[in-house]
Length: 197
Image 1 (cartoon, rainbow, N blue to C red):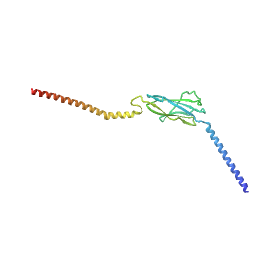
Image 2 (image 1 turned 180 degrees about the vertical axis):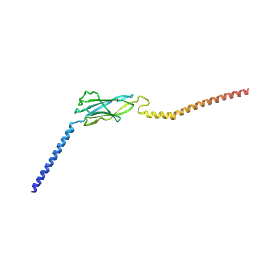
Image 3 (image 1 turned 45 degrees about the horizontal axis):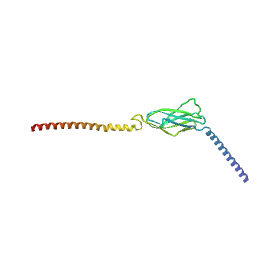
Image 4 (image 1 turned 135 degrees about the horizontal axis):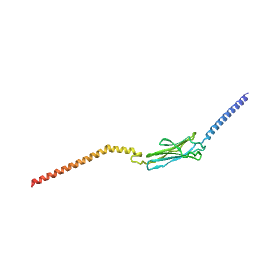
């Protein structure tokens, strides 16, 4: 009786473990198939020009590729953290497996701008590494040193300019005083000569 009980328990345990194994296997296959059905898109891109000597338009272009030929739910460029939607260069191009071009054009002021691209096929969101664009300011009071130049100008007007005016006024007064003293000396010298004669 004991042997039969052990045999039945062993058989039930084996069946239970087999059932668990089959459930786990089928569940894993189902999940795996869902994940394998859709692959993430690939992104590459850049900006033109990377460096410029004056403020002006910068063109950001991005190539979106999707092995499943899924159209993007969105393609964006982030410039200094601000999100901008990119537009299709060729709306008739519907083949995403070989890459589709997107573009965003804007006018950037002087300074260093950090940008990266992001896209989603509805299932996966991908992004590129951050890169920079440097634009030299076209004006004296532009670019990254504008605040420093403005502060220097204010300090000059408040502290230096009044002293320059004061020094110029003092020099002019000094010249007049010297002229006046020189005139008195020469007229006093003439009087002495007349008395001696």
